[in-house]
Image 1: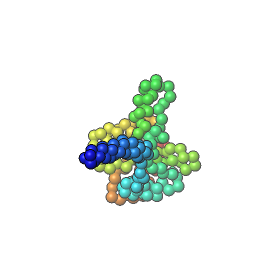
Image 2: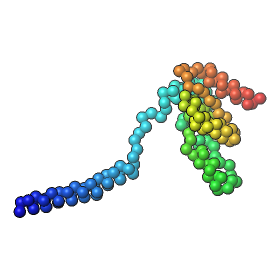
Image 3: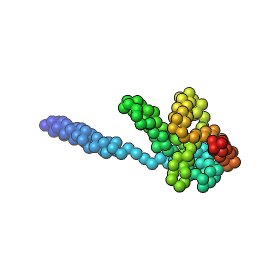
Image 4: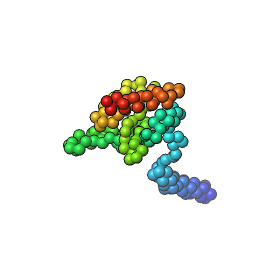
Length: 171
């Protein structure tokens, strides 16, 4: 008789454990899966932070610099395309980000884009992305400046590249 009671007790315990595993734990997992986010510790890499500080000095109050801007917030697909062509064009720009975007401080209109190229830009897949980005921005009439990642930057070099190109464009 005590063996039967022990067996019934073990079965009841197993049923309770199975119910807890099937009912309670998935509820916790589901709640955790609904908002599975955590804070990103830093917005910029050390190289990007270093470059941003010098870029801001180089442009002074002539431009306001924004970082990590979505490409789709800078350029858009031209109107008049068929639905599928429009969607394909949008898909190509929707998940890409730009390192830095310089805006006119008075109205925040986009003036130019700056990309900081590290060693990842040597990979063929990244070069394809860069080529597409160059062409897409050019097609939209947005000037792009590329700077290689370096240990240090000078305000004069960045200023000369950006403002020298602007003077060329004006002439």
